[in-house]
Length: 142
Image (cartoon, rainbow, N blue to C red; front, side, top):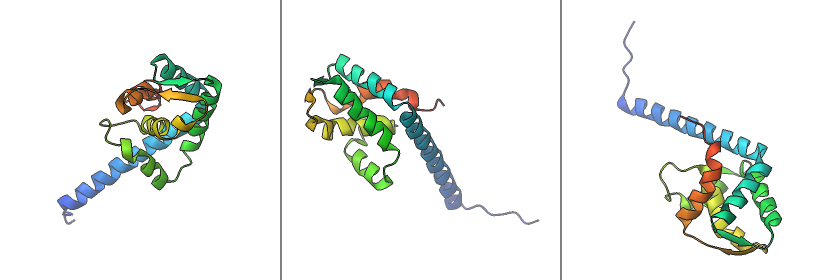
């Protein structure tokens, strides 16, 4: 039987595809878990943002409902829309949690215009860290 010659490019391509599949599966599981427990995560998340003085609100319930809605819809977004949403904060941290990145950008860009939000404080990285402190449980352990 002849020995199959494996070119370095072919091996590299296979490795890249395997990594992409792994990341896509991880992201799909994170979105599914976030959707299943959206109510619990939204309550914890809003409480953490208030405790760390990131947001100032006049209606905690309204902000919780909005965050829950985002967690429910996140997994149903088109890939292009998700990437466009993440683009401004993609380089915020290395090996970022995609759910935390999405919610950070949502808070900075969209939630600031919500009638229940009086003000948002902190830099993008501070906001990401506060959100990720709650959402890190979604990430599979290595």
